[in-house]
Amino acid sequence: MSKKLINAFTEMREEDALKITQDMLDAGTSPNDILKACRTALDAIGKRFEEGAYFLPELMLAGEIMTQITEIVKPKLAETPESERHGKVLIGTVAGDIHDIGKNIVSFMLDANGFEVLDLGVDVPPKKFVKAIKDFKPQVVALSGFLTLAFDAMKDTVAAIESAGQRDKVKIMIGGGQVNEEIKEYAGADGYGKDAMAGVSLAKKWVDHK
Ligand code: B12
Image (cartoon, rainbow, N blue to C red; front, side):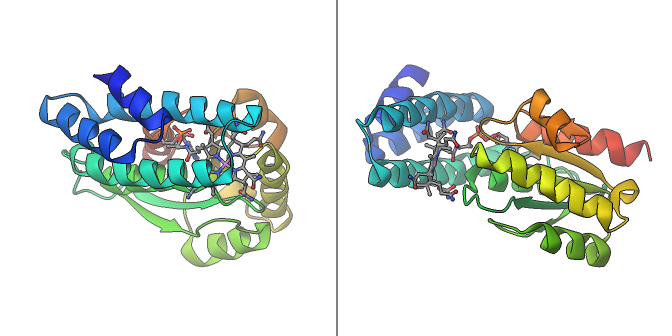
C-alpha cells in the first residue's frame, strides 16, 4: 500500500492520499512507515519542481497534504506518551527558512516523549534563539532547516549562542532536508538527527546523562 500512497501523493491526488493513509493505519501499518512513504513522495515532488515540471503551487499543495497526513498519524505516533518530563528543548527553523512540517513533527515527538518544548516558529534570527536560551533555560536547542541556505544560518546561530556565552549551557542538534553529519561539523553543532525519533534519542541521551 506504501506504493499507492507514494503515487497518489506524488501525483497530487489529495483525497486519495488521505484515504490511503487512513486505510494503511487501519490495516496496522506503522505511522513511521507512512511518514517514510511521504518522504519518498516529497523527494519525487522536489525533483519535479527542480526539473520545472511542478511549480510553487504544487510545492504548497504538497506541504498541505503532508500537514494533513501528519495530523492523521499523530495520535498513533504518540500512543505511548511518557508522563515523566525529561527536560527542556528549544526548537525553531533557522533564519531565512520557512519550512516547518519536519520541525513540527520533531516538536510533537519531543513533547510526546516527555520534553517541555518551546517552539519559536520559522525564520528565527540567531538573536531570538539566544534570548530564548536565557529566558527558557533549555538543556537542548534543536535547529531545523530545509534549504541549503539554512547551513549558514545554522552556523551563525551556533556562533551567536557562543558569543553570548551560552554555548556550554546547551547541547545543539540540527536536522531537516539536506542536513547531514558534515553540516553538523560545519555549523559547530553537537548532533545531527535524520528524523524526529533520532532527535528524541539525542535529546534523551544528553538530558539523562547530564
Ligand atoms: C513542502 C515544501 C515547501 C513548502 C513548505 C511548507 C511548510 N509549511 O513547511 C513551501 C511551498 C512553503 C516551500 C517553499 C520553498 N521551497 Co520548499 N519544499 C517543500 C518539500 C516538497 C517538502 C519539505 C517537507 O515539508 N518535508 C516533510 C518533512 C516531514 O520531511 P522530513 O525531511 O522527513 O522531516 C524529518 C527530518 O528532516 C527531521 N528534521 C527536521 N528538522 C529537524 C530538526 C532536528 C533538530 C532534527 C534532529 C531532525 C529534524 O525530522 C523530520 C520528521 O521526521 C521539499 C522537498 C523535499 N524533498 O523535502 C522542498 C524543498 C525543501 N524546497 C525547496 C525550495 C527551493 C523552496 C523555495 C525557495 C521555492 C521558491 N522558489 O520560493 C521556497 C523557500 C521559502 C523559504 N524561504 O523557506 C528546495 C530546497 C533546495 C535547496 N537546495 O535549498 C526543496 C528541496 C525542493 C527541491 N528539490 O528543489 N517548500
